[in-house]
Length: 295
Image (cartoon, rainbow, N blue to C red; front, side, top):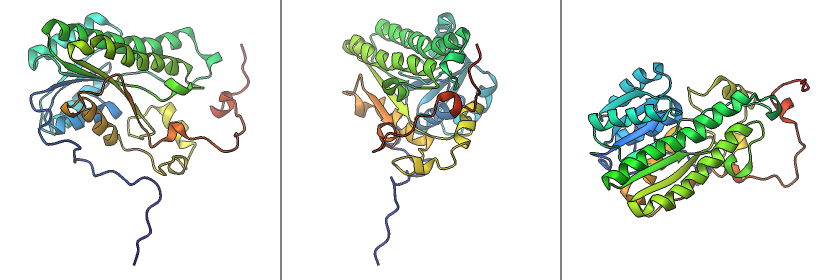
């Protein structure tokens, strides 16, 4: 009897399995921004399972204690540090703490970002500045500190910037984040060339729809309005956070040393989908349930 194949892309191996050999990151220090919750924590967990010592940075100190307990249970050492990545002096202090505790971080995962849906005409100047400052400027400031220390130490290293697919396509309803993420993608390409001669890889990693318990209320509300998320993906399923973690551990690993300046999209081809017939346009205000614009 022939089994009927399951439609869509197969589900991944279970949580706790790893894509790389055990001990791949033994003796390696990995710094993850925004690593106390959500996809950042999922990425950190996969590095920990492979033996890494972790430095977890987050703006919100309440996220750090629970993350430290959870990630420490996976075997490696964990250092947590409150850090606003908009503040270069504080970034330098966090790197100092990491070096004092474990040594110079070998891997930097720039995951921290800010985002919320808003029509462009409703966006305040402060909202624009805040999202761009955290997502783009903060990513650069972290990469700059990592790069300067590695150049001074004449030590190779690896940076993974977490991006977004609307860096290519534009992001209606997320103009601030889309513009910032386009800058993050360009940083990958620029810094990979500048720092390649010094042994520093720079790559990008873009997650698709990967629901998790730490999603913001705005994004969760948008997702809840669409109760057929699986059917709306070419894979006929959403992603699992651990799938992003596996991709990150590969990009920063010894097995990917000749990959640099590349942004890998992990979304089951969703960002490339197109309809045969052009769908009707629904203005962003309507999609977000907002009334007419009133200046």
